[in-house]
Image 1 (tube, one colour):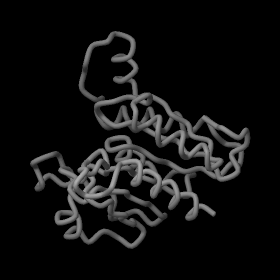
Image 2 (cartoon, rainbow, N blue to C red):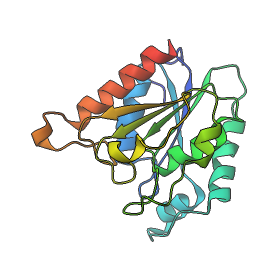
Image 3 (cartoon, rainbow, N blue to C red):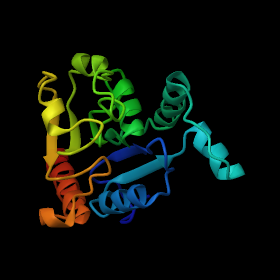
Image 4 (cartoon, rainbow, N blue to C red):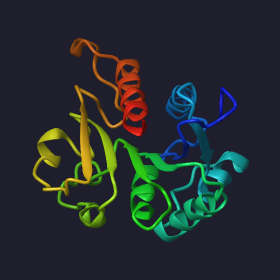
Length: 199
């Protein structure tokens, strides 16, 4: 997706989460907002999601090695000098973060990182994050059931991994009405930050 014809700010490969594919509302909205800021946004579907799209039957995500290989195949398609960034929603962001350090990407953006499975805060998914040296930005809702503010502040992540907290956001970055914020507010904030950081 590219709205103005030229990726002046770079190319973002954007991976979907476990339960919804590349055409979900969240994926379409964030991709369109980034494209309006002169990013080329490349979306794709992992193999299991392609089967869901073809058959209409639900199935669990592929194992991590297959997810990593699929994402890596997309990365390998681009070698034209356009600045590259990896990004993903939830599971897709986790996969992006696992490839990031040894990829040609110069930045990584994750929208709702699944620090642990819901209701299982002892099963952490942060070991590889401790080894990341390139700049990674995680945009996380403060009440995310897979990594809330109170949980994540205990993890002692490296300085290269920056956390950006979204007030009252859940795992889909959606706040409650009583908070005075909307998901539109949060997504606009994210895109504005990414644009400014890249420049």
